[in-house]
Length: 581
Image (cartoon, helix red, strand yellow):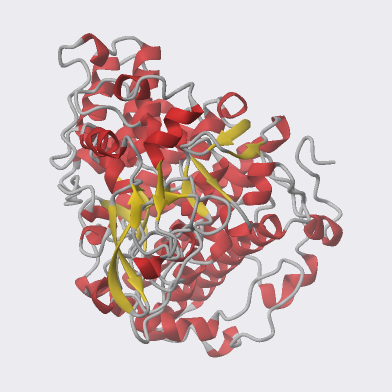
């Protein structure tokens, strides 16, 4: 596959960017900048070092896990954002500190690239402008994530020479507006320069493109409620009014969109490029933290879908799902829940002695639901292509209490105290991916940061806010009616599909974003910007049998993360976010 060629260069680039850019010290273990960035080959390698920063766990490498701190996921440990969802985190918590450092690492790599490429005299002006545009886009990506997590942050641009200025990087925080304006300025300069490619040659598939710049700028405008400007940027990407040749379209198969080949489709506007296989471990740890003990490498399910997410999937006719219509008394009866999910294994754990009483009703119910549910979630009593004792093994998700299910007997084994919880299928390796995966921490599936379905739904949100409900519904329906999904269109006849006023359409947007984009890391941002986080996130969280799993916390202070304590120790000019003093 063509995407893997980019990693040959990335491997070399890691030598150049082997350390983490703390704002208080110069990383002496790196290749000196005076000996690099001399020709186009080195510039390409340096740019791959900037892209590599995206994959760092605490930059975007664990973005799939951030849904855990919304209402649509659950998890534990730092990899599952456990301290945040439980409300036990502080400015000294590892993931809070590392997120700040990893994202600023990306900023500083971008700054170095912009400065050194600007100084280069050996490449053409056209090439120089292209690489600078690429680095500015990536800088905007890192700063926008910093803004989302922490609010206004200190802004450092390419005029900073880290090798000489590292002792003076002690700026106070810029305001929210100044931070957003900086991001918009970078993206606008890339657009007006006309230097960013609409498409790269095949060997460089996956690098940032002009469409990605417009899509990101539109997203920034949406987050700051500039709906008309956001709409114009999204229309550029969707409609290609100037004939640039973007060529974006929804991929027919929702399931294959999150597998090799589909992950490189025309739906992907900007995705982190991941690779795997022997000698090609350059991926993200989706399999490691979303899989089970039955998954390649024996994995940890730190990141799991909530019952609320699974119950959110509609029936195929578009009606809201209601357990009691399938199994009377389910919603209020513990015994009924047990009869629906809990089986008995033989004493040796090798076979199912007695299946759950309502198993067949359960399987029938799955067939009646939005097809995206079975693609996204590994459901009880369905099968999964696992990898056990270095060989493929079909495993069944059986729920049992008398004997723990084990993968060696062909059952899904869930780690920890979450045996009566759903787990993810989306982004998780099946078998050994025909040799495509060599390491559970490096899933060779590209991870979308922006894809066309997301743009359609963001555009629908803008149109709804602008009072154009019919256009909003049109774009919601485009997502619902992907050929492999084919859910009935909103306003297509039955009363339960009606959505005409602003509130009704907004409810549809909320629903569609929750299920279409599950495990892609958007829900927490959405709930905060919609001012719904305090209503929908906190409270007890239960498994599908009604067992309490944990209690989520979310208060006013959690709208933004605290500024890391170590950074405030180093830089006395930093002021913390509200509620964190």
